[in-house]
Length: 311
Image (tube, rainbow, N blue to C red; front, side, top):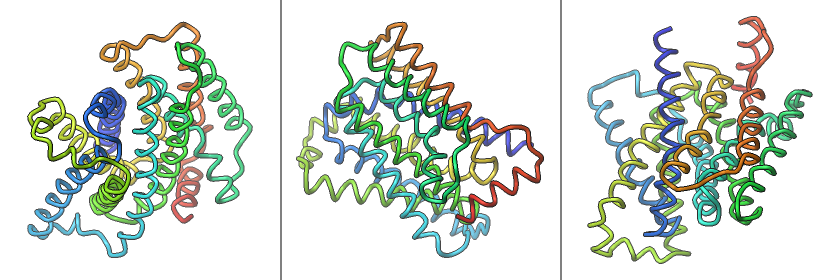
C-alpha cells in the first residue's frame, strides 16, 4: 500500500512537471533549435542516470542490476520517445502551449486503437465513443483561438501517436526489466538521435556561443528539463508501471494537459474562449473515461495486464 501511494504521488508530480515544462520549452526554442535543445536535454539526463546507475553498481546493489537483454527494449521505447519529443518540440513552434498539451493528451485515448491495429485487440463501444468525443473536443479547442487549425496542431497530433506507442511498449517491457536501466537506455538513445539530427539539419554551433551559457533562463531550462522532466520522470514512469496498473498510470498522466493549460494561462498569457474550455473538458473527460474499467475481479485485471505484458 505504501509503495502504491508513493507511485501515485510520484506520477502526479511527473504529470505536473511535464505539463508545466511546455512553457519553458517553448521559451527555450527562442535560443536554440528543436533537435539541438533535445540533444542537450537528453544527453545531460543520460549522464545523470548513468552516474546513478554506476554508483549503485559499485555498491553492489543487486536490486538495481536487473537482468540482461534490456538494451533492445530500451531502444524500442526510446525510438517512440524520440519521435514524440521531436513532434512535440516542432509543434510548439507553431501552436500554443494549451493546444499542444491537450492534443498530446489524446495519446491516452488512442492507445486502445493502436493495440487493435497491432494486436487485434478490438476497442469497446465506450472506447470508440471516447475517441469521437476527444476529436470533437480538439475541433472546439482550435475554434477558440485566434489561429485556425495549423501545422503545429497536426505535428502535435503525431506526437500524441508516438507517446501512445511509448506507453504501450513501456507497459510491455517495464515489468520484465530494471526500471533504471530501461530509463537510462531510452534517454541515451533520444539524446544521441537528437544530436545526430542536429548535426545534419540545424545550426548546432550556436551552443558554443558564450552569451548562450551566460543566460540564466537557458541554463535553468536545460537543467530543469534534463533532471526533473527527463531523468527523474522516466525512471518514475518505468518504476510506476511495475508497481501499479497501466490503467491507473494512464488516468494520472491524463492530467498533464490541465497543468499545461494552467501554465499557459498564468505564464504564457494564453486565453481560451468558453468554447475552447468546453473542448478541453471533452478531451480530458475522454482520456480519463477511456482508461476507467468496469468493476472486475482482481483475477480478471491480473489476467488482462499479463496479456499486455506478453505482447
